[in-house]
Image 1 (cartoon, rainbow over the protein chains, first blue to last red):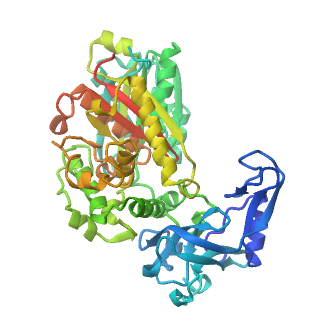
Image 2 (image 1 turned 60 degrees about the horizontal axis):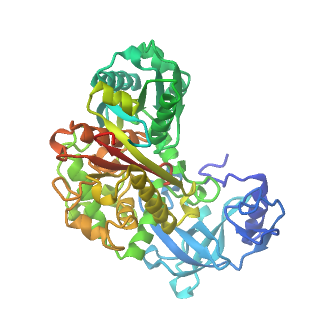
Image 3 (image 1 turned 180 degrees about the horizontal axis):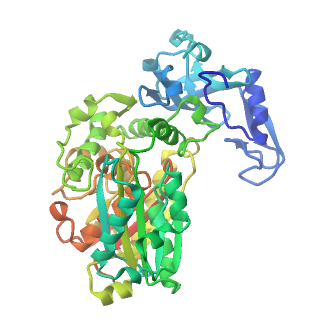
Amino acid sequence: MIKNQKPIPAMQPWTKEFWKATKKGKLLIQHCQACNSHIFFPKKVCPECWSDNLGWQEANGKAKVYTYTTMLDMVEPIFMGDLPYVIAMVDLEEGIRMTTRIVNCNPDDVEIGMNVEVVFAEVSPECSLPMFQPTDETLRVPLPDLEGSE
Amino acid sequence: MSKRNLAIIGIGEVPTGTYPNRSRWDIIYETCMAAVKDAGIHKNEVEGVVTVAPQAQPQITAEISFGKIPEELGLKGCREVCICNAGGASTSNCLRLAEQLINGGQAKIVLIPHVTVHSTIPVPDLIAFFAKAGIDLQWEYPFGNTYNGIIAMMTRRYMYDSGTTEEEMASVVVSLRKWAALDPNSIFYQKEVPSVEKVLSSGMVASPLHKRECNVLGDGGGAMVVTSAENAKKMGVPAAYKLGESSRYFSAFTTTRTNEDMMEGFRNSTLEALTQAGLSKDNIDIWNMYLAYPVGHPMFMEAVGICEPGQAGKFFMEGHTWPGGKMPWATIGDAIGRGHTGSGVSMATYIETARQLMGKAGEKQVPDTKYVFQNTSGGSGMNFIATVWGRDNQ
């Protein structure tokens, strides 16, 4: 166990593909070949039609902030060193909503409807989380990456 | 005659607070004995014990699951024992199980206990539990989210959609704390009620949620004795009769549901419960809401048409929901006012519903209460169970 290791997503056999892709800088969306639905959170079978004929499509990585919060206190000790940080739900252009972090941005500049794009933050040598930064480059503030924080 | 056939005839409760020397079994003894005494029955008349599952307390949960309560209390007539876990919606489901045992002829009288002691759980264990309760371990938790964080995001979106101000959101806390200050079982009993300004001057925890808009964990417990409506009537004791019930499930996680989904479920289940009771929302004397954080209160008010969209915050600000106001609302002050006892706030809310209908609510008694609406919700707000209770069986 690496000291100060951040939690790794609790993967399922059918979600490993997603996490393999984030490691390579790609954001995948699970897709049902039978009924054409996008699926999130990814499942073993399609929650719409129970087909197991599922595949993956690459998202273009563009999204809008649906809602957000700036975490300032009362988080787990492992995340204390990251404070303040912004947790958000973002709507991908492909029509799914994810919980994520907004990074490379002053928390005061985040707002509902803001355009954001995916970036990948390494939490361990095997795992990267999809996070989002402002599409507008003038709003970007370089912040220490996750690995550098304690 | 109601379609339902259940009445609460006895209640027992201990004060909520930080009492590390009051053990879980102390609480079980005290609350169960008080509820049996309040019902005016002998202990051996209890034929079933259906317990609300404590959260984050594996040892007591195992002991209760494997039947220790009837043995410990010497309930010689007990035939049925089980535990029920649906998070904050557990008590509603215990009542349903009791109703089923009673109507199936398995038990005439059922005891429903709850106990929680947070103060002796190591703090890191508590933080870890509440960072993962109702939060997905793959798609939410690794980003550093917490329970306050998910509710903060819901609150932000509600405020954005409805135009509700932070002062209006803080006024929900003021209302809840006014009731709590009158409640001998609240962690905030006889404590100063904060003003809107004071709520907003408490530190920000997860924007837009301030410290006083989040819950304080407490120890507590309660118990109810229930029987059939006919039996309650025959016994001639003060009782709260279940008149209507309906529910909706939304989703396990906040990422996978919208405020609109929730409001539609609030509206439909409430309407169905009222219709089953043969009532309309105008008949309700007390809205005894358990929504755990401020945001659910204005959302519910607007969902069921008590207020026009975007007007609920003003309604709270104007004091209509306060003690003495025209719409008594969450008369234990919800989890914000009572102190958060895990799955226990749902128990405390039912006990309050019964207490008001039985006319035993003391200083906070709402005069001539005939009908009380009460909800529960579990997990991160996974569901909504709407119930209607009456002073008389009709």
